[in-house]
Length: 141
Ligand code: 5GP
Ligand code: ZN
Image (cartoon, rainbow, N blue to C red):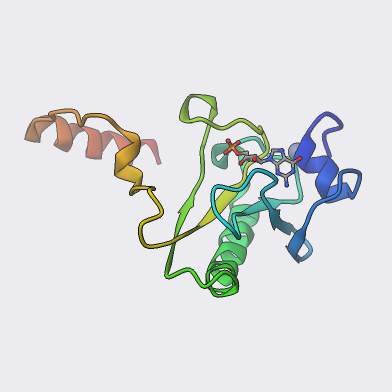
C-alpha cells in the first residue's frame, strides 16, 4: 500500500468504489469517469507502477481476471465488443501510477476507433530496421 496512491486507497476501502470483482491479489471496479457504460479498471492489490514493474505472478493474476471479466462486462451492458488496454507509463497517457487495465465496452457507432487511431502517422521502417528491432527485443529478454 502506498499512502498517496488513489488506487491503493480504493483497495484498502478508504475511497469508495463500485467494486465488480475481488480476489486475493486482484481488484476491479468501475471507472469514475467512464468512456462507456461498464468501463472497468482491473488492478493488482499490490502497488506496482507499470507493467514493467509488476512481478510475473501478479501480472498473470491480473490477466486472468481481465480474461474472466471481459465477457461479464460486455454482457452486463449488452456490448458486442470491447477495447482492452493499458496506458503503460506517463508518456503513454498513464495518469494513475498504479498499473491498471481498462475494459471499455464498445458499441456500433460509438465514435471511438481502434488502438491504431491513437497515432496520427506510422513510421516508415525499412526491412533491415525491422530485422534489427526484432533481434534487439529478443536479446533484451
Ligand atoms: P489512466 O489514464 O491512468 O490509464 O487511467 C486512470 C483512470 O482512473 C481514468 O480513466 C480515471 O477516470 C480513473 N480514476 C481516477 N481516479 C479514480 C477514482 O478515484 N475512482 C475511480 N473509480 N476511478 C478513478
Ligand atoms: Zn497504488
